[in-house]
Image (cartoon, rainbow, N blue to C red; front, side, top):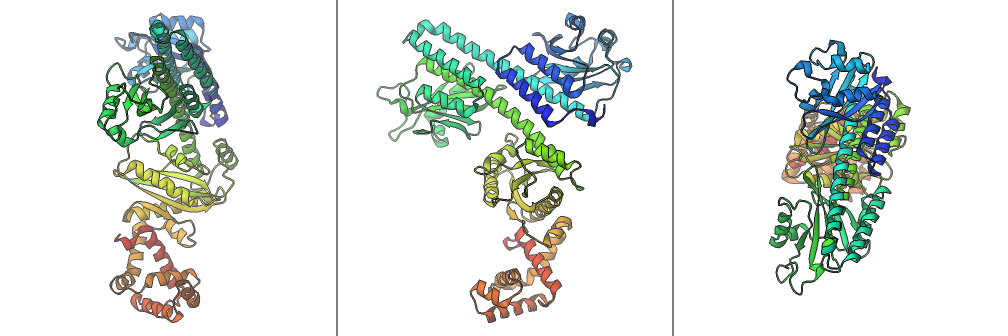
Length: 623
């Protein structure tokens, strides 16, 4: 099967992802979800059969947990012990077991020629397949199983087919993680039920907690999102609720009126708050709510001390995914000291938040991959191969590329922290206003923003966000490139932005560079060697800059203004608020310093380019 035959359209892929996500959110049994994944593998990749296999509790065998097209006899044959994870030799080995052991995708183009997998001689004839592709399933840090697609004819598997089965393996991992989180939720519910007799307010309090649980589950199934969930919890607790990520960035907060933020970073670093949060990390308390004292002017507040107001103590619940802290749920300004059952409700809510963040992370990953692929096709040197299809793909991601867009390029010099998801940060930093189409390309990050309204301020805001995130380890440079009005313009606009970025970085990286309206200079940025352009600008303008540094005289600003107004002495004098004779004197001084005549059109063009390069590389700052 060729790559062109693989049904990898955005519509098919997103439809499959949505259906699997709905099954996960509806709490369908795990085997039903895994069977859906197997069915989509057959439809998307073109397999005749597919199986999702999980390791048994002692990690000795792989068992079939969901499948499509396989006969009951074949499933029984596999589950009868045929797939040993660590066989004693090649005669007992299988591609699925190897994919599990080594954590990589394994392809077998012809089972008849696969000498190192002895079990295939018995298994393949039983189902009638000639080729297979196996990808590992990564759970919370460990490999938990494999997904295997089978073909009835011998064939080589291409890169696109491998990528699709690996993406489907991620869907299985999502389902497994969701099942684990739901099991943890049920454990909390069971604990609430066992504690019924111990609650000081008896059955009424427990009924309140159960109502909150059912309301929470209803909101999850209705997919109201993080903001809707936070609003519901704030109303139930009659308090302010904040969800933050691991870096402290607020993801959602409520209520809209009377909101009280949680303790800030400085307050959390003080001894009482820090001790409460560190105790939360102790073994056995990883999912528990911490009561965080807020330091007042008279000293630390101790939770539970006589006379302490509830508003002086915040609640904090960790949001945990894969054993790692990914965020926190904070409750501030509660009306009363917390009841045990209220803390359980907050813990349960933190589990739901973990589920929501897991799904958001998956959506971000899929969106980022699709955006990167789209940019790769759009920025090809010879233009997009299928313009109409590319416009449709962009529209599916929420972008109308038939409108003029500014092509911007972000580059980073220095080590980049591994945690942040940069394209998503750039998209969120663009608010308010249209979000950019952002994705990695050739070692940088390309951003496409509608040319109207002017995106200059939003680009500067995005740069400020990135600087705050990566400083001081890395230095970001953001170039606002030319406007692309047609699809064929995007590649050239990107090359101009890339040329400006390289020019800035070889001199002094960092900051914002605007080259949206360069005219003829853009051609040299697109094709010229950065170091040669820098030397050219420095050599031509050095006599003028040196004279100005020693004696003043505003020669460079006069030259820039004179060129900008069409080489009119009168217009330059009006713009500079000086006498025309002053402008004439300064221009004559420039001619003496550079040894060239400003009446020469070629000299004017060279000076215009030199000033443009000077702006980009910041020669006036010692570059």
